[in-house]
Amino acid sequence: MKVASVLIPLPVPEAFDYAVPDEMVVARGDQVAVPLGPRLMRGIVSEVFETTGSNRRLKAVEAVLDDPALPPSTVDFVEWAGRWTLAAPGEMAATALKGLRAPPPGPNGGCAASASASRPARPRPGRRCWRRWATAP
Image 1 (cartoon, rainbow, N blue to C red):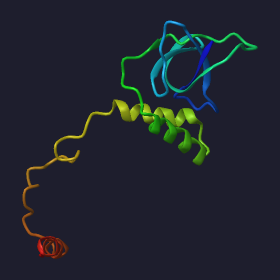
Image 2 (image 1 turned 45 degrees about the horizontal axis):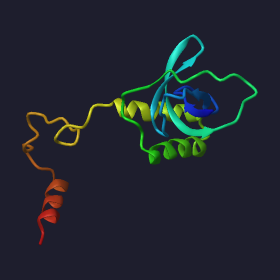
Image 3 (image 1 turned 60 degrees about the horizontal axis):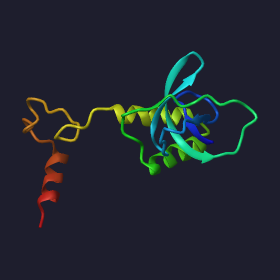
């Protein structure tokens, strides 16, 4: 029987184990829908392993979501950040999931251009010094 440890984006102390149905392919970093109480939650697969049996009946993973999977290095970082900050790994998973859903930065690096952004009316002294340094050969 395959079992997936899933990080739920809630302040819980550890990942939850779910049974993986035989027809489903799950990998580390995949986003999955799993039952938690009466509702379905989005989670990140942190580990997939084989086991011969269990002393409790595990709930099954409902579905693998079409959203992009987190790279294994990001899952490692989420787990490390949880250990380093002594926070629940679910809180770090919530942060990672928010980052995946954020819009991509604009053409100017996410900074909004204003009407006067082309040239200031009067350059400040520090700005003139920086401009000289930046254009020096």
